[in-house]
Image (cartoon, rainbow, N blue to C red):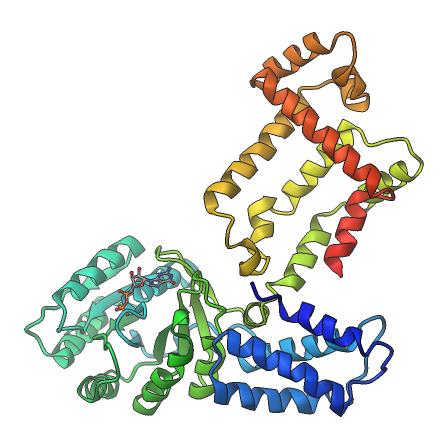
Length: 450
Ligand code: GDP
């Protein structure tokens, strides 16, 4: 596994600590690492070159502030520049047209056009309270028309029928007519897929565009396409005035460098990201967050924010003090830590924000089990008396430990061995806390916060 860019740059700058400025010489070395990270994320080479040149301008002479080292400063310049390149702010769909506002979907076959059409229908219904009609102008694959029918139903929108013996422009005209008569706010037009750039089909979609005069022409592109995305994007940009991009399959293990390439080539904003095969797997594209992913850093900023938001600083400090004064870590503290975890959005919420390379091996089933475990542990500890939580020795080596455990198990509705397991885990945690002497949670948090 390639280590992330922050790590690599940090290693690099260890050799140049003490330098107050980013200089021409050290910036060269660091930019080589940035370049590698971008290429590994599948950003197209010309786009990388362009980007590096811009970052270099910004980086030269940038002050190294506070305790940060030059590597971190450069990473933050790179991340900001990446986010700015991929678009700033939120770019939702433009619907400012005489109804129906027409949205034309374009892209290669398999990019996710049909799925995205339905996802957008759902988004428009739920978030923008619109009345939405969909239609397929894909007369080459009857299955595509049927597929749109099925997913449109799932989205709760209306589907306008079309058949393979019709001409795409006749379908479009009929659909727009129907939409007008029935007061639809939005008409989503799915188009024929192309396996590769095909002149005849490009001419067809250009024709549809001229006929429909859509307010949005969305280019749907698969994030897994990597380097190839650049050629596809070029061809579609030449054929159509694109108004936005939907980057699909971001739930895959691609680092999503295609976002940068496609955005740069087309100049159109990335409006949405597809995050699953399901109908609700669509998110408004978040450039800053995506910049972290491209660099292989995950959403470190959001993670740190989330962590500090959930943390009760006073409680963590109290715990730290307690450990310092040697009064020991008891089951109340253990329970408090588990409650803290829950506040932070649980394990799954936390894992979501970590770099995908770190969490790839943790399946949904594992997370589910871990969450259940956490809740169960909480239940068991809540079934203890306050005194037992304060004096875990009563349960660990007290005379009445067996009957106490039996009572706790029946109170929490679990088996005795599960109570024992919690106690073992507590014991291990206590050992760890002692080793870290000075406050486990605080230290862990500090580590996370960098
Ligand atoms: P089209 O040929 O462009 O209309 O593509 P489809 O909508 O038929 O999608 C092709 C395949 O990609 C289907 O199996 C979809 O379920 C899948 N797909 C589409 N969007 C996403 C996404 O965001 N994530 C994942 N994992 N799969 C997606």
